[in-house]
Length: 183
Image 1 (cartoon, rainbow, N blue to C red):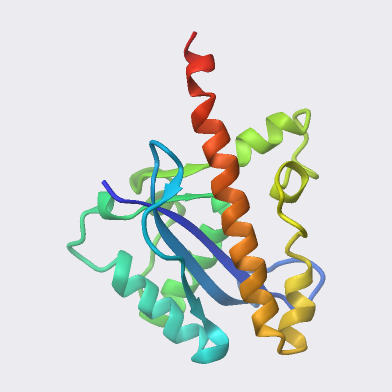
Image 2: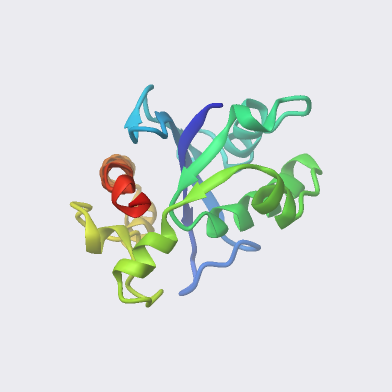
């Protein structure tokens, strides 16, 4: 089994994200050990601004979703994966003609989402249940829109690196406390 930290960054010209009209501007993933929460490989960032949304979506699909690949070769580990899955489903159909359902990503493909832990720590509230509230992540994703519009791509990459480190740190805390849950 191969577990990967997984996330996307998106650009929305509107106020609220809309997978049908917004675009994926980065897809990032890093091989990790789910028993420890520690990274095994380098953080890979597929960047739309260096090619196109279509190319990064196709590249990601070719790496991890191609036909015949065992679903256990890429177990997504992330935060609020439902958001990412909605975008992937629409973009795979748009660029590859692959019609996946939410069942294909939510039920059939193994994954692990930390969002429920953040919600519990936030008193059961979804609003405000974010990594920047419970880790050293120094900002939320709202800054991405301005960075992208201003072509400050290095700031987007710095944000992604900080978010990845914060995610892994939080995951390591969950893992290190699992024995308390088993008592």
